[in-house]
Every structure is written in structure tokens, then in C-alpha cells.
Length: 83
Image (tube, rainbow, N blue to C red; front, top):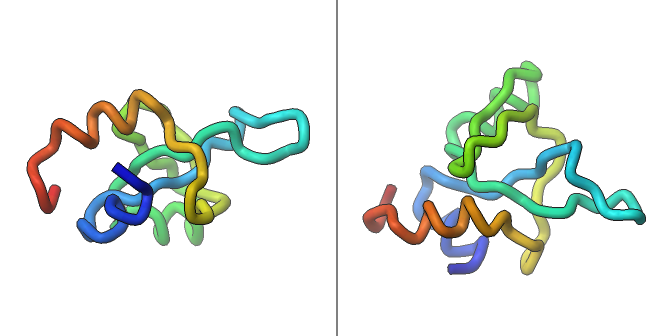
């Protein structure tokens, strides 16, 4: 499932974990988190919990075709449509 499909559900959206970086400072993976928590985290600095269990503050948004966390993707694919 692509990151675009996840955004269309309205509830889950990929976001970045700051401590997983590649050598050129790009995020290694983007994670699925509840969409309603993204803005709150970005503005207030609160932490979100990804489907894989990672906890982090939102600081960046993914671009199309960004790499998605394999664990988040597995969990996302088991959710019913519209979750």
C-alpha cells in the first residue's frame, strides 16, 4: 500500500522519526500515525505513537514514494478499510 493510500483514509498518515537518519540527513523511514495528531504534534511538540510503536514528535512530512517503515506497513495492511 502506498503512502498516498494511507493519507486517503483520513485517519493514518506517514510521518518521520528524527533518530532514524541516513548518512545524508534524510529520514530512513516514515511511519504511520493518526492524522488528527500530526498537526498537534507539529505545533505543540507533543509526541505521537506510530503503528509500529515508535514514539516521536512530528517535524517533517513525507514526499510521494518516501520509504515507509516495514512494521507500520504490516500493521496498516491488517486494518479494515477506513481505519
